[in-house]
Image 1 (cartoon, protein in one colour):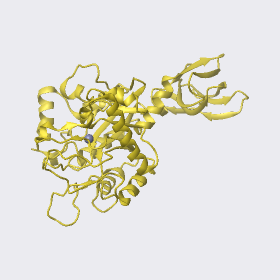
Image 2: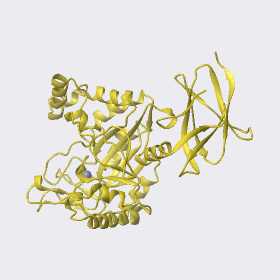
Image 3: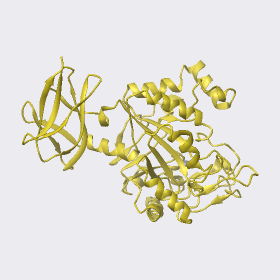
Image 4: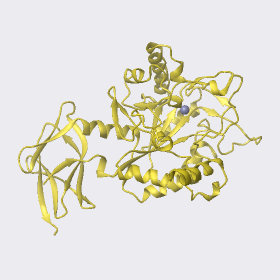
Length: 401
Ligand SMILES: [Zn+2]
């Protein structure tokens, strides 16, 4: 019997994360209509009809109830794309009771995680192209840490807890990125747009589809652009995004389906990237966004629903990774073992046994039955909250051959 620690919880082949950037206390009207139209809300309208949340839940999350969504929250009044421009509505997250209630509602939903995404998102300039992303504006490590602290306090005032992780604005780390994150007590962070490996064939070693530590913080990769259309999304035929997918297919032999399948086969992180709204202050459509990409997202999650994946928040993913990175199995005899850890007294992890002839169960050291191993494709697995101070036993319960 060979006992191992599974790479992912419940011995799933790969984890799936759904990241939505730029939820904020913002609305950006495009139409002249007095009522709210789809896409005009970045979060400000909470659970109202046609709000960001109303659209996303009705058109995606209700259809795929296993999806876990991580929203990246801009905490203070956000900067416009260029000087002189303004959002229709734009306030800090603690300005309105309705928005605070909405954040609390999201935070109480087990399938939703709120994460940190700066205070203002950056600094506007005369031209859009000159917009400085938030971490690029920091002139010292001290200033970066101070501003993160200010943002985290706003976050805490709204939902009564601190964020455990977040993402740089525009994936720009500036000069003090990693240091400022590791010194701000974050558990995890999305440091890069790692899908650039697929998109542009980047060979830069900082991009990676797997989890790793960066100064003690779990680096969660961002691997799939939700606006990379499948060629089967015929509704988008002749759009710029569709033509790009066609180009990638004809010239580079790449499709979104193959990209996802490759991540899956290699047991890497499938993390799908989106924005909360298509509308910016400069009138341009921001991609990816949940409105333009809704058919593509439905297509992607249909593909994933046929696979053995683990839907996780970034925090859950980080916890599992930290757990398995800090434990070892120590066999005391043929069927008795202990999980050894220098930092944990308790750790939830998944153990596997490769055996298609027998079934096993876990017992404590006094022979009290705990749980049977479950069967999945010739593999046995068990997820349990192990105490690292005590020994456990595994007994064969019957032969199935
Ligand atoms: Zn952003």
